[in-house]
Length: 188
Image (cartoon, rainbow, N blue to C red):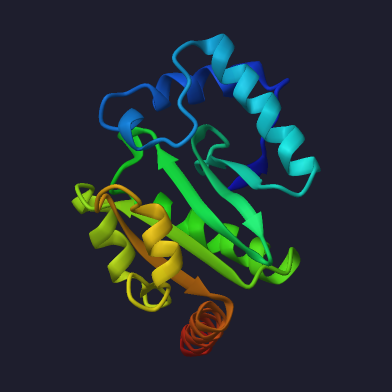
């Protein structure tokens, strides 16, 4: 479902660039590329930044191994970072976002030892805000993290701030594992 970003995966990069430039996707992408060459350059910078511990970036794959988007943890500092995710338009509303986030959060929290994932979501991005607020491990943090909220909205109110604490995600994860075990026992 997830794979490390790769500047040498030319077919994958072409597909990702085409998906990213769709008008329903492009405005919400953090690392915007206006040409394929710029996309490759940004991917190279991303790979190098990950090697330096500044971010974590993965390509999201569908069940046949086709690239469909990216999921990233940017601005890593003191065990926390900001989530940035985008999926190509043909993959919206098909459940890929949840599966990708679960796999990414498991890696980031349980393998890489992060404590907090923040999400900044544009107030005008109703679809993403609704999706975030549906997740049982997400906390709206505009009031609980006032300094970060103020930093995101220096000049005007553009972003809502959401937080995913490791302990809340772990509780969700353990519940999910328990539910899957119960379902498997009932099927047996």
